[in-house]
Length: 366
Image 1: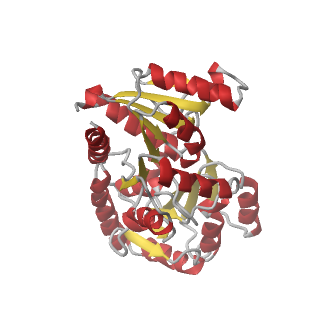
Image 2: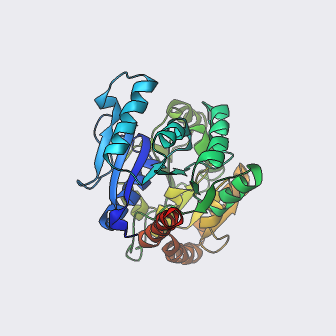
Image 3: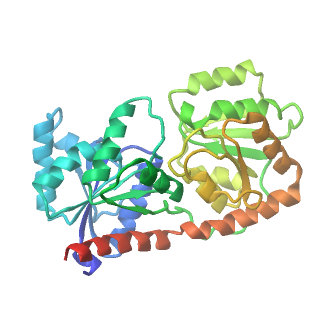
């Protein structure tokens, strides 16, 4: 079937947010739309404005705006009405927790194919609803038509830990920056980015930097992002008397920091994929990352385009940073290889994989 005849509705919690999930959805939805698919987005919550640019021809249905304070039954009625109005071929959840809606929506519209697109790894620890997430995974594995995960590593976790009745496919997140120019010499900056929350491990980066700052006062660490741990991290920086470790807040121009920096650090305890890692490497930044679940090990090639360090080993993390800080030739060569390695994640290739999945599922039912 021609993609132009396929109607795809992405279902997300809040399209107003500015996180990696929303960013990737904007890229995939926009890309499929450009290729002729009829794409819409359903957002449970949100203020009616998207942080990331969405093509005008993609309709966004904001449930909270349509029916503020609606109960679950009314929400399901409105979502079902929208999906029928769109004559939906595919409903694609952009978070596995949405299974509690989509399971019912699928029953109400049986002809519609239901894909769950998970952005967190199987073992990701959530502060809230951890047990509910476990139930969600089991329901998706049993009742959805297909599950999409972000890494081969995570695909293995699902296959090993669940009795999957649905199909499962690994589709990497796409690189949002493509064909960057060769990097000019940057500044002595180590850059990191992400939510200021425990899972992102910036407290571990502080511990590593405490070992390095006294010896390398010309170097600076910049961390972009906001989150609930800001005060705790600021206190840790003050307590360690660090003068060259700065939390710079949220930025709409993160690419400017990729261009300025010389090294990228990913101190995460957990990742769904590691989008910022991929972005940084496309700007020819060699990376030092903890080998956490799940994603960095499929992006970083140890000793070639960066370094992987045993999880939470802050001393080893500091040693790898120091190795790059003190060896200009190694840093430049690893940066060149980092940039070259990101071609595996180019947008066209990732969109090809999405098209292949959608059309194979339609052909199976047709």
